Image (cartoon, rainbow, N blue to C red):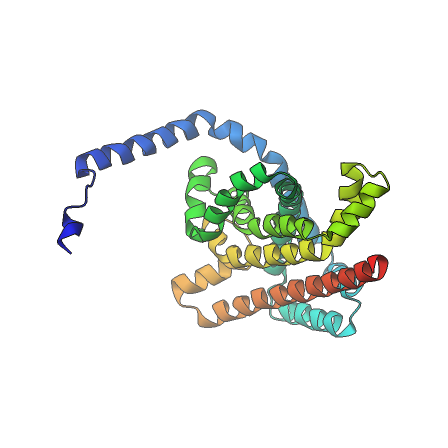
Length: 295
């Protein structure tokens, strides 16, 4: 193993100088442009605040009926709807309703942003190989980098609060929707595309009427994974001010409150199961519908 000791390395002084130069450059950038960048994300902050206000200030029975109604419309399963209703009632009974609603609002906003950014990017990757070649390494980094690392640049750039946490969650959760949109479109049967070409469809018509409808079940699987990853990031994002179920869990870890941590942890698991079962059932319904229409 002597060869390891002879491996060429940068000396400590140069390494310290390089790290200091990078840190100083990033600090100077944040001081110069931090306020401008923060202003760009003001609409996201307003969107999140309005979503939180709706979920927390609307009478609980209205929110309860709205969520269970969405569960029924998406899944058309009494078992899933009843399970969701029981979970929500237990969450309210144990005094975790407000924190759960804040978490659901955060997941909703993150999912909307991920869909708005991820699906067009996935479509571009499916249509142009150069875009896929450029984006794939970025997605690899996003999916393999430890989740705590996402907090460092957003906190240094935007400070502590809702928006930095929102951005960290979106960056962490967005890769599945991008990859599965790309995969779903590329897996569309060539015979379908040839038939669309035979009818004189333009590229836009072929995408809108053939590729996206046939890829929709795969895209729904990506949305499902995005929601699950966003929920997994909730506790970590609570370290920089994201409100919801993550903060009681973090407080329980810091102060060794066993029941507080377990109850809020089970609440996170409960809403994760609701999102997972409902989105999977909706994806299966889309698959059956697609098979009937195009089969």
